[in-house]
Length: 484
Image (cartoon, rainbow, N blue to C red; front, side, top):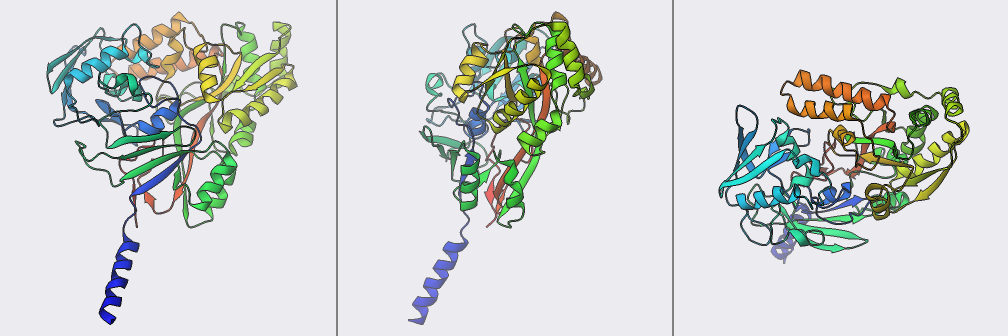
């Protein structure tokens, strides 16, 4: 009897001490689809980047470009021919082999005339993609570009198979350490460890991404333990409650998210009006009111932690008297349509900015849009006057060189700066060009630049390996584990 009791107790102790191998991650926004090569929403990458899909290269948690499906690469002396050596034994989650032909298919598809890739510009410099042999890919560029490995690290450049490319939007098939299992729309996405993964197996066996749009519901879910980690927590005003609770760890870092009051430059054609809008906005009041103090003021579309950043906040400093002077020069201004997507920074920030604009004589009409509506009406159809959004893609000032981008800024001088910055190999020369580019869009008041989005997260204190900063839009679970 004593022996049986001891054995039972030992079994119970072993079970209690077994390391947890599943995790539930909270997200405020649900992705519109699950294919990062076919959508602009950050929420897509937040689920699948590095987890389900992989590219030739990838971003690490410190922002460095690291090998992924390509174990190494070489570049020719003229900077135009890049040769990538692929890892052996890589398979897609449907069991088919991944080889050089899949890379050719992926990159040709991304740069094709009918491509729906949101970052098609990343591939425009590619002349040819060739499969030298199953394990080797040769990419030839029209112009030398030392940023090719960086461009290939984006979620928009993950490798897909021709057999599953068209259905990845609802049932993604990648090469990553986790395979897609289920998507209960409106609720969650589930992934599970892929046992035939070519690389190091993750510690986690399963992960669930749970979508909770309401900040109060998010707070309750984390407090109750229904959510293990909420890397981009939507209720920063409640973080102090978690900081004082030993069950949790509050994780505050930086992101690549330039939060802007974006303006439709095809509608707001008078630079003086755009300047007036910028001078009407008290950035710190927006940060305090919408983000409860979390955020860094910016005066151009560039991350303050980037070594090439120029602080240009004074060019559009809060100056309501100057805003009124400019509006007097402009004349009558019609009511402007302010379209707001779901994130708290947009909804809360929009109300504050509308009030600030009203104080100088600019009236706005606020329309709250769901994410899919915002992507269709604002991003795709450019049917808006003003909107608020965080651009979370890394080092993406080049979007201002695209006249067809949703804020429709067309400046040949700026386009030449970006083109030249892509050609030079000297970091010093490139930095000088990027600084001129920052100054150009600030001078043109393309948008009203608000703040760099902070990464405010909360997690169970026993979890380690979550990213502190966000060099790209991802919830990379490859290094996440429970400590007990």
